[in-house]
Image 1: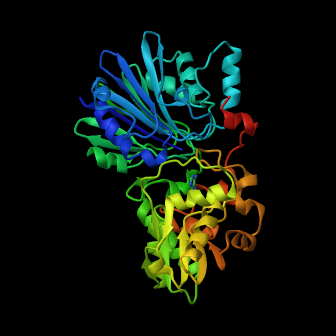
Image 2: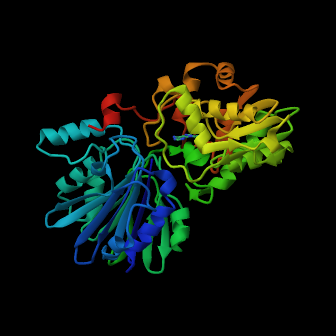
Image 3: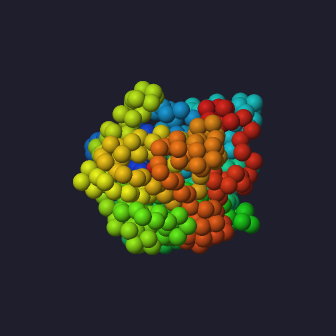
Length: 458
Ligand code: AMP
Protein backbone atom coordinates (compact mmCIF):
# COMPACT_ATOMS: atom_id res chain seq x y z
CA UNK A 1 0.00 0.00 0.00
CA UNK A 2 1.53 3.26 -1.04
CA UNK A 3 0.77 6.79 -2.13
CA UNK A 4 2.47 8.45 -5.09
CA UNK A 5 2.67 12.04 -6.26
CA UNK A 6 4.40 13.82 -9.16
CA UNK A 7 4.57 17.32 -10.60
CA UNK A 8 6.34 19.03 -13.51
CA UNK A 9 6.30 22.73 -14.29
CA UNK A 10 6.26 24.37 -10.84
CA UNK A 11 9.04 26.43 -9.30
CA UNK A 12 7.92 24.98 -5.98
CA UNK A 13 7.84 21.35 -7.12
CA UNK A 14 9.34 19.84 -3.96
CA UNK A 15 7.19 21.95 -1.63
CA UNK A 16 4.04 21.07 -3.54
CA UNK A 17 4.99 17.39 -3.44
CA UNK A 18 5.62 17.58 0.30
CA UNK A 19 2.14 19.04 0.76
CA UNK A 20 0.62 16.39 -1.51
CA UNK A 21 2.19 13.63 0.56
CA UNK A 22 0.32 14.82 3.66
CA UNK A 23 -2.91 13.83 1.90
CA UNK A 24 -1.51 10.44 0.92
CA UNK A 25 -0.33 9.55 4.42
CA UNK A 26 -3.16 7.06 4.95
CA UNK A 27 -1.77 5.02 2.04
CA UNK A 28 1.52 4.37 3.84
CA UNK A 29 3.08 5.34 7.16
CA UNK A 30 6.39 3.48 7.19
CA UNK A 31 8.52 5.85 5.15
CA UNK A 32 8.27 8.85 2.86
CA UNK A 33 10.50 10.46 0.29
CA UNK A 34 10.83 13.15 -2.34
CA UNK A 35 13.12 13.50 -5.37
CA UNK A 36 13.39 16.88 -7.10
CA UNK A 37 14.96 17.40 -10.51
CA UNK A 38 16.05 20.73 -12.00
CA UNK A 39 15.94 21.62 -15.70
CA UNK A 40 19.71 21.09 -15.97
CA UNK A 41 19.14 17.48 -14.89
CA UNK A 42 20.63 17.87 -11.41
CA UNK A 43 18.63 16.05 -8.74
CA UNK A 44 18.33 15.79 -4.98
CA UNK A 45 16.49 13.41 -2.73
CA UNK A 46 15.22 13.15 0.84
CA UNK A 47 13.86 9.94 2.33
CA UNK A 48 12.86 9.26 5.91
CA UNK A 49 11.32 6.52 7.99
CA UNK A 50 8.03 7.47 9.64
CA UNK A 51 5.34 10.03 8.93
CA UNK A 52 5.42 12.94 6.52
CA UNK A 53 4.68 15.31 9.41
CA UNK A 54 7.74 14.27 11.37
CA UNK A 55 9.74 13.20 8.37
CA UNK A 56 11.17 16.28 6.76
CA UNK A 57 12.54 19.52 8.09
CA UNK A 58 11.46 22.58 6.12
CA UNK A 59 15.07 23.59 5.45
CA UNK A 60 15.77 20.24 3.80
CA UNK A 61 12.74 20.64 1.53
CA UNK A 62 13.96 24.13 0.64
CA UNK A 63 17.18 22.57 -0.65
CA UNK A 64 15.28 20.46 -3.15
CA UNK A 65 15.43 22.67 -6.21
CA UNK A 66 13.83 22.11 -9.57
CA UNK A 67 10.52 22.28 -11.37
CA UNK A 68 9.96 18.53 -11.33
CA UNK A 69 9.45 16.33 -8.28
CA UNK A 70 7.98 12.99 -7.29
CA UNK A 71 7.08 11.71 -3.83
CA UNK A 72 6.05 8.52 -2.10
CA UNK A 73 4.51 7.28 1.14
CA UNK A 74 5.13 3.61 1.84
CA UNK A 75 3.59 0.70 3.68
CA UNK A 76 5.49 -2.42 2.73
CA UNK A 77 3.68 -5.29 1.03
CA UNK A 78 6.82 -6.80 -0.55
CA UNK A 79 10.27 -6.19 0.87
CA UNK A 80 11.08 -5.14 4.43
CA UNK A 81 10.49 -1.83 6.17
CA UNK A 82 13.92 -0.19 6.12
CA UNK A 83 15.36 3.07 4.84
CA UNK A 84 16.94 1.15 1.92
CA UNK A 85 13.41 0.33 0.84
CA UNK A 86 12.08 3.88 1.21
CA UNK A 87 11.02 5.38 -2.10
CA UNK A 88 11.37 7.09 -4.54
CA UNK A 89 13.99 4.71 -5.92
CA UNK A 90 16.76 7.01 -7.15
CA UNK A 91 19.76 6.08 -9.30
CA UNK A 92 22.32 7.79 -11.48
CA UNK A 93 22.75 6.50 -15.00
CA UNK A 94 24.33 7.66 -18.26
CA UNK A 95 25.15 11.01 -16.76
CA UNK A 96 21.55 11.58 -15.65
CA UNK A 97 19.06 10.16 -13.18
CA UNK A 98 16.12 7.83 -12.91
CA UNK A 99 13.67 8.25 -10.04
CA UNK A 100 10.60 6.09 -9.50
CA UNK A 101 7.71 5.93 -7.04
CA UNK A 102 5.51 2.84 -7.23
CA UNK A 103 2.11 1.84 -5.83
CA UNK A 104 1.07 -1.80 -6.25
CA UNK A 105 2.81 -5.15 -6.21
CA UNK A 106 4.59 -6.92 -9.04
CA UNK A 107 3.74 -10.61 -9.07
CA UNK A 108 6.77 -11.74 -11.11
CA UNK A 109 9.37 -9.46 -9.50
CA UNK A 110 11.37 -12.38 -8.06
CA UNK A 111 11.74 -13.94 -11.51
CA UNK A 112 12.57 -10.61 -13.18
CA UNK A 113 15.13 -9.86 -10.52
CA UNK A 114 16.70 -13.31 -10.88
CA UNK A 115 17.06 -12.76 -14.63
CA UNK A 116 18.66 -9.34 -14.10
CA UNK A 117 21.03 -10.69 -11.42
CA UNK A 118 22.05 -13.52 -13.73
CA UNK A 119 23.17 -10.85 -16.20
CA UNK A 120 25.19 -9.04 -13.55
CA UNK A 121 22.73 -6.47 -12.13
CA UNK A 122 23.18 -5.56 -8.49
CA UNK A 123 20.30 -4.37 -6.29
CA UNK A 124 20.32 -1.87 -3.45
CA UNK A 125 16.97 -2.90 -1.94
CA UNK A 126 14.55 -5.80 -1.59
CA UNK A 127 11.73 -3.87 -3.26
CA UNK A 128 9.94 -5.26 -6.28
CA UNK A 129 9.89 -1.70 -7.67
CA UNK A 130 13.67 -1.66 -8.22
CA UNK A 131 13.39 -4.11 -11.12
CA UNK A 132 11.53 -1.49 -13.16
CA UNK A 133 14.42 0.95 -12.74
CA UNK A 134 16.94 -1.68 -13.91
CA UNK A 135 14.80 -2.43 -16.92
CA UNK A 136 14.57 1.28 -17.80
CA UNK A 137 18.36 1.55 -17.61
CA UNK A 138 18.72 -1.38 -20.01
CA UNK A 139 16.43 0.10 -22.65
CA UNK A 140 18.05 1.55 -25.76
CA UNK A 141 14.87 3.32 -26.91
CA UNK A 142 15.17 7.01 -27.79
CA UNK A 143 12.28 8.63 -25.90
CA UNK A 144 11.74 8.34 -22.14
CA UNK A 145 8.18 7.03 -22.61
CA UNK A 146 9.49 4.34 -24.95
CA UNK A 147 12.12 3.39 -22.37
CA UNK A 148 9.43 3.07 -19.72
CA UNK A 149 7.17 1.11 -22.09
CA UNK A 150 10.00 -1.34 -22.79
CA UNK A 151 10.75 -1.64 -19.11
CA UNK A 152 7.13 -2.37 -18.21
CA UNK A 153 6.59 -4.87 -21.00
CA UNK A 154 6.76 -8.25 -19.25
CA UNK A 155 6.27 -6.83 -15.77
CA UNK A 156 3.20 -8.53 -14.24
CA UNK A 157 0.96 -7.43 -11.42
CA UNK A 158 -0.13 -4.04 -10.18
CA UNK A 159 1.65 -0.79 -10.79
CA UNK A 160 0.77 2.83 -10.80
CA UNK A 161 4.07 4.68 -11.13
CA UNK A 162 5.48 8.16 -11.43
CA UNK A 163 8.97 8.21 -12.91
CA UNK A 164 11.53 10.84 -13.81
CA UNK A 165 13.98 9.94 -16.58
CA UNK A 166 16.37 12.83 -17.20
CA UNK A 167 14.02 15.78 -16.90
CA UNK A 168 10.91 14.08 -18.26
CA UNK A 169 8.14 13.19 -15.81
CA UNK A 170 6.21 10.03 -16.66
CA UNK A 171 3.12 8.43 -15.16
CA UNK A 172 1.82 4.96 -15.98
CA UNK A 173 -0.76 2.39 -14.90
CA UNK A 174 -0.68 -1.34 -15.46
CA UNK A 175 -2.99 -2.76 -18.16
CA UNK A 176 -5.48 -4.03 -15.54
CA UNK A 177 -5.74 -0.65 -13.77
CA UNK A 178 -5.48 -2.11 -10.25
CA UNK A 179 -4.31 1.06 -8.50
CA UNK A 180 -5.67 4.54 -9.11
CA UNK A 181 -3.69 7.48 -10.54
CA UNK A 182 -5.25 10.88 -11.21
CA UNK A 183 -4.03 13.73 -13.43
CA UNK A 184 -4.42 17.33 -12.32
CA UNK A 185 -3.53 20.82 -13.47
CA UNK A 186 -1.95 23.47 -11.24
CA UNK A 187 -1.41 26.65 -13.27
CA UNK A 188 0.94 25.52 -16.04
CA UNK A 189 2.10 22.48 -14.09
CA UNK A 190 0.86 18.90 -14.54
CA UNK A 191 0.27 16.96 -11.37
CA UNK A 192 -0.23 13.22 -10.74
CA UNK A 193 -1.53 11.68 -7.52
CA UNK A 194 -2.89 8.37 -6.25
CA UNK A 195 -6.01 10.14 -5.01
CA UNK A 196 -7.66 13.44 -5.81
CA UNK A 197 -7.50 14.53 -2.14
CA UNK A 198 -3.80 15.17 -2.86
CA UNK A 199 -4.77 17.40 -5.80
CA UNK A 200 -7.15 19.32 -3.53
CA UNK A 201 -4.52 20.06 -0.90
CA UNK A 202 -2.14 21.60 -3.44
CA UNK A 203 -4.91 23.52 -5.23
CA UNK A 204 -4.78 21.49 -8.46
CA UNK A 205 -7.83 20.76 -10.60
CA UNK A 206 -8.69 17.16 -11.42
CA UNK A 207 -8.49 16.55 -15.19
CA UNK A 208 -8.86 12.78 -15.64
CA UNK A 209 -7.25 9.48 -14.63
CA UNK A 210 -4.22 7.94 -16.27
CA UNK A 211 -5.93 5.14 -18.24
CA UNK A 212 -5.07 1.48 -17.68
CA UNK A 213 -2.05 0.68 -19.86
CA UNK A 214 -1.41 4.33 -20.65
CA UNK A 215 1.94 6.12 -20.31
CA UNK A 216 1.82 9.90 -19.95
CA UNK A 217 4.96 11.98 -20.48
CA UNK A 218 5.48 15.61 -19.49
CA UNK A 219 8.50 17.61 -20.63
CA UNK A 220 9.28 21.18 -21.67
CA UNK A 221 6.95 20.76 -24.68
CA UNK A 222 3.93 19.83 -22.53
CA UNK A 223 2.04 16.60 -21.92
CA UNK A 224 1.66 13.73 -24.38
CA UNK A 225 0.09 10.31 -24.03
CA UNK A 226 1.11 6.92 -25.32
CA UNK A 227 -1.55 4.20 -25.20
CA UNK A 228 -0.15 0.85 -24.14
CA UNK A 229 -1.66 -2.61 -24.01
CA UNK A 230 -4.83 -2.49 -21.88
CA UNK A 231 -6.50 -5.62 -20.54
CA UNK A 232 -9.84 -6.25 -22.32
CA UNK A 233 -11.42 -6.27 -18.86
CA UNK A 234 -10.29 -3.83 -16.18
CA UNK A 235 -9.40 -5.07 -12.70
CA UNK A 236 -9.63 -1.96 -10.57
CA UNK A 237 -9.21 -2.76 -6.86
CA UNK A 238 -12.65 -2.67 -5.25
CA UNK A 239 -11.00 -2.47 -1.81
CA UNK A 240 -9.94 1.11 -2.65
CA UNK A 241 -13.62 2.01 -2.46
CA UNK A 242 -14.32 -0.17 0.59
CA UNK A 243 -11.47 0.71 2.90
CA UNK A 244 -8.31 2.12 1.49
CA UNK A 245 -8.91 5.47 -0.20
CA UNK A 246 -10.07 8.62 1.60
CA UNK A 247 -13.77 9.45 1.33
CA UNK A 248 -13.00 12.97 0.07
CA UNK A 249 -11.19 11.45 -2.93
CA UNK A 250 -12.29 10.34 -6.34
CA UNK A 251 -10.59 7.14 -7.42
CA UNK A 252 -11.18 5.45 -10.78
CA UNK A 253 -13.26 8.54 -11.54
CA UNK A 254 -15.81 7.76 -8.80
CA UNK A 255 -16.46 9.34 -5.40
CA UNK A 256 -15.29 7.22 -2.47
CA UNK A 257 -17.87 8.83 -0.18
CA UNK A 258 -20.73 8.01 -2.59
CA UNK A 259 -19.40 4.47 -2.98
CA UNK A 260 -19.28 3.85 0.79
CA UNK A 261 -22.75 5.29 1.38
CA UNK A 262 -24.15 3.08 -1.38
CA UNK A 263 -22.37 0.08 0.16
CA UNK A 264 -23.98 0.93 3.51
CA UNK A 265 -27.44 1.28 1.98
CA UNK A 266 -27.09 -2.02 0.15
CA UNK A 267 -25.88 -3.65 3.39
CA UNK A 268 -28.99 -2.42 5.21
CA UNK A 269 -31.19 -3.94 2.49
CA UNK A 270 -29.39 -7.28 2.52
CA UNK A 271 -28.67 -7.54 6.21
CA UNK A 272 -31.29 -5.69 8.27
CA UNK A 273 -31.17 -5.85 12.06
CA UNK A 274 -34.78 -6.00 13.26
CA UNK A 275 -35.27 -4.73 16.79
CA UNK A 276 -31.99 -2.81 16.96
CA UNK A 277 -32.02 0.62 18.63
CA UNK A 278 -29.03 2.40 17.06
CA UNK A 279 -26.30 2.07 14.44
CA UNK A 280 -22.71 3.33 14.53
CA UNK A 281 -19.43 3.08 12.64
CA UNK A 282 -16.05 1.75 13.60
CA UNK A 283 -14.28 5.04 12.93
CA UNK A 284 -12.96 6.26 10.58
CA UNK A 285 -12.94 4.02 7.55
CA UNK A 286 -16.57 2.91 7.90
CA UNK A 287 -18.13 6.29 8.81
CA UNK A 288 -19.69 6.75 5.37
CA UNK A 289 -20.95 3.15 5.19
CA UNK A 290 -22.68 3.58 8.58
CA UNK A 291 -24.33 6.78 7.27
CA UNK A 292 -25.68 4.77 4.35
CA UNK A 293 -26.88 1.99 6.67
CA UNK A 294 -28.64 4.52 8.90
CA UNK A 295 -30.27 6.22 5.93
CA UNK A 296 -31.64 2.98 4.45
CA UNK A 297 -32.62 1.32 7.75
CA UNK A 298 -34.06 4.38 9.46
CA UNK A 299 -31.98 3.58 12.56
CA UNK A 300 -30.57 6.45 14.62
CA UNK A 301 -26.88 7.04 13.78
CA UNK A 302 -24.70 7.43 16.89
CA UNK A 303 -21.06 7.89 17.83
CA UNK A 304 -20.50 4.92 20.09
CA UNK A 305 -16.80 4.36 19.50
CA UNK A 306 -14.18 7.06 19.87
CA UNK A 307 -10.87 6.65 18.14
CA UNK A 308 -7.70 8.14 19.54
CA UNK A 309 -6.08 9.98 16.62
CA UNK A 310 -2.78 10.45 18.37
CA UNK A 311 -1.89 6.77 18.42
CA UNK A 312 0.55 5.70 15.76
CA UNK A 313 1.70 2.16 15.23
CA UNK A 314 1.63 0.36 18.55
CA UNK A 315 4.24 -2.21 19.46
CA UNK A 316 2.48 -4.51 21.86
CA UNK A 317 3.13 -8.21 22.40
CA UNK A 318 1.09 -10.36 20.01
CA UNK A 319 -0.67 -12.25 22.83
CA UNK A 320 -4.44 -12.00 23.29
CA UNK A 321 -3.91 -9.69 26.29
CA UNK A 322 -1.59 -7.59 24.15
CA UNK A 323 -4.10 -7.38 21.33
CA UNK A 324 -6.90 -6.36 23.71
CA UNK A 325 -4.65 -3.64 25.10
CA UNK A 326 -3.88 -2.50 21.56
CA UNK A 327 -7.59 -2.10 20.77
CA UNK A 328 -8.09 -0.13 24.01
CA UNK A 329 -5.23 2.21 23.17
CA UNK A 330 -6.91 2.99 19.86
CA UNK A 331 -10.64 2.94 20.73
CA UNK A 332 -12.98 3.54 23.63
CA UNK A 333 -16.74 3.00 23.90
CA UNK A 334 -19.27 5.63 24.98
CA UNK A 335 -21.30 4.11 27.83
CA UNK A 336 -24.03 6.75 27.63
CA UNK A 337 -24.77 5.72 24.03
CA UNK A 338 -24.57 1.97 24.52
CA UNK A 339 -25.98 1.06 27.91
CA UNK A 340 -28.94 -1.29 27.68
CA UNK A 341 -29.19 -0.96 23.88
CA UNK A 342 -29.36 -3.42 21.05
CA UNK A 343 -26.76 -1.99 18.66
CA UNK A 344 -25.60 -2.37 15.06
CA UNK A 345 -21.86 -1.89 14.54
CA UNK A 346 -20.92 -1.25 10.90
CA UNK A 347 -17.36 -1.93 9.76
CA UNK A 348 -15.93 -2.03 6.25
CA UNK A 349 -14.13 -5.35 6.65
CA UNK A 350 -12.95 -8.08 8.97
CA UNK A 351 -9.42 -9.32 8.27
CA UNK A 352 -7.96 -11.35 11.13
CA UNK A 353 -10.85 -10.64 13.47
CA UNK A 354 -8.60 -9.59 16.34
CA UNK A 355 -9.49 -5.89 16.38
CA UNK A 356 -13.16 -6.69 15.91
CA UNK A 357 -13.20 -9.13 18.82
CA UNK A 358 -11.63 -6.46 21.04
CA UNK A 359 -14.21 -3.89 19.91
CA UNK A 360 -17.11 -6.21 20.69
CA UNK A 361 -15.69 -6.77 24.17
CA UNK A 362 -15.48 -2.98 24.63
CA UNK A 363 -19.15 -2.57 23.61
CA UNK A 364 -20.30 -5.24 26.03
CA UNK A 365 -18.15 -3.74 28.77
CA UNK A 366 -19.93 -0.42 28.18
CA UNK A 367 -23.32 -2.04 28.67
CA UNK A 368 -24.53 -2.92 25.15
CA UNK A 369 -27.34 -5.49 25.50
CA UNK A 370 -27.04 -7.01 22.01
CA UNK A 371 -24.29 -6.48 19.42
CA UNK A 372 -25.16 -7.02 15.76
CA UNK A 373 -22.23 -6.60 13.39
CA UNK A 374 -22.76 -5.62 9.76
CA UNK A 375 -19.83 -5.56 7.31
CA UNK A 376 -19.93 -3.45 4.13
CA UNK A 377 -17.96 -6.01 2.10
CA UNK A 378 -18.03 -9.81 1.71
CA UNK A 379 -15.88 -12.18 3.83
CA UNK A 380 -12.16 -11.83 3.00
CA UNK A 381 -11.06 -15.32 2.05
CA UNK A 382 -7.79 -14.76 0.20
CA UNK A 383 -4.65 -12.62 0.36
CA UNK A 384 -4.05 -9.72 -2.03
CA UNK A 385 -1.07 -9.90 -4.40
CA UNK A 386 -1.78 -6.58 -6.03
CA UNK A 387 -0.85 -4.05 -3.38
CA UNK A 388 -3.16 -4.30 -0.35
CA UNK A 389 -1.58 -5.52 2.86
CA UNK A 390 -3.66 -8.60 3.70
CA UNK A 391 -2.06 -11.54 5.47
CA UNK A 392 -1.86 -15.09 4.14
CA UNK A 393 -4.95 -17.32 4.13
CA UNK A 394 -4.20 -19.01 7.49
CA UNK A 395 -4.61 -15.68 9.28
CA UNK A 396 -7.80 -14.59 7.52
CA UNK A 397 -10.60 -15.49 9.90
CA UNK A 398 -13.29 -15.90 7.22
CA UNK A 399 -11.03 -18.15 5.14
CA UNK A 400 -10.93 -20.65 7.96
CA UNK A 401 -14.49 -20.90 9.26
CA UNK A 402 -18.08 -20.33 8.13
CA UNK A 403 -19.74 -16.95 8.83
CA UNK A 404 -21.72 -18.26 11.83
CA UNK A 405 -18.48 -19.38 13.46
CA UNK A 406 -16.79 -16.05 12.71
CA UNK A 407 -19.70 -14.44 14.55
CA UNK A 408 -19.15 -16.71 17.54
CA UNK A 409 -15.38 -16.11 17.47
CA UNK A 410 -15.76 -12.33 17.59
CA UNK A 411 -18.53 -12.57 20.18
CA UNK A 412 -21.48 -10.90 18.41
CA UNK A 413 -25.18 -11.81 18.60
CA UNK A 414 -25.44 -11.72 14.83
CA UNK A 415 -23.07 -11.11 11.92
CA UNK A 416 -24.05 -10.10 8.38
CA UNK A 417 -21.75 -9.45 5.45
CA UNK A 418 -22.58 -7.69 2.18
CA UNK A 419 -22.84 -10.06 -0.80
CA UNK A 420 -20.31 -9.99 -3.64
CA UNK A 421 -23.01 -9.01 -6.16
CA UNK A 422 -24.40 -6.37 -3.82
CA UNK A 423 -20.93 -4.85 -3.37
CA UNK A 424 -20.18 -4.77 -7.10
CA UNK A 425 -23.56 -3.26 -7.90
CA UNK A 426 -23.06 -0.51 -5.27
CA UNK A 427 -19.65 0.87 -6.35
CA UNK A 428 -19.40 3.56 -9.06
CA UNK A 429 -19.12 2.18 -12.58
CA UNK A 430 -19.82 -1.36 -11.33
CA UNK A 431 -20.51 -4.20 -11.43
CA UNK A 432 -17.85 -5.05 -14.07
CA UNK A 433 -14.21 -4.04 -14.27
CA UNK A 434 -13.15 -4.69 -10.68
CA UNK A 435 -10.69 -7.04 -8.99
CA UNK A 436 -12.38 -8.84 -6.08
CA UNK A 437 -9.92 -11.70 -5.69
CA UNK A 438 -9.64 -11.28 -1.89
CA UNK A 439 -13.40 -11.94 -1.63
CA UNK A 440 -14.12 -14.29 -4.52
CA UNK A 441 -10.83 -16.15 -5.01
CA UNK A 442 -10.96 -15.12 -8.69
CA UNK A 443 -7.38 -13.91 -9.20
CA UNK A 444 -7.23 -12.15 -12.58
CA UNK A 445 -3.61 -13.24 -13.10
CA UNK A 446 -1.29 -15.96 -11.85
CA UNK A 447 -0.42 -15.27 -8.16
CA UNK A 448 3.32 -15.20 -7.37
CA UNK A 449 4.95 -18.60 -7.73
CA UNK A 450 7.03 -18.47 -4.54
CA UNK A 451 4.94 -16.62 -1.94
CA UNK A 452 7.71 -16.50 0.71
CA UNK A 453 10.22 -14.92 -1.65
CA UNK A 454 7.53 -12.64 -3.05
CA UNK A 455 6.83 -11.34 0.49
CA UNK A 456 10.54 -11.00 1.25
CA UNK A 457 11.04 -9.20 -2.06
CA UNK A 458 14.11 -11.10 -3.17
P1 AMP B 1 -9.54 -7.22 12.42
O1 AMP B 1 -10.76 -7.38 13.25
O2 AMP B 1 -8.29 -7.39 13.23
O3 AMP B 1 -9.60 -8.07 11.21
O4 AMP B 1 -9.48 -5.71 11.94
C1 AMP B 1 -10.51 -5.18 11.16
C2 AMP B 1 -10.23 -3.72 10.92
O5 AMP B 1 -9.07 -3.56 10.10
C3 AMP B 1 -11.37 -3.05 10.20
O6 AMP B 1 -11.79 -1.96 10.99
C4 AMP B 1 -10.80 -2.55 8.89
O7 AMP B 1 -11.23 -1.23 8.63
C5 AMP B 1 -9.31 -2.58 9.08
N1 AMP B 1 -8.58 -3.01 7.88
C6 AMP B 1 -9.05 -3.57 6.75
N2 AMP B 1 -8.07 -3.83 5.89
C7 AMP B 1 -6.93 -3.43 6.47
C8 AMP B 1 -5.56 -3.42 6.06
N3 AMP B 1 -5.20 -3.90 4.88
N4 AMP B 1 -4.66 -2.92 6.93
C9 AMP B 1 -5.03 -2.45 8.13
N5 AMP B 1 -6.30 -2.42 8.57
C10 AMP B 1 -7.25 -2.91 7.75
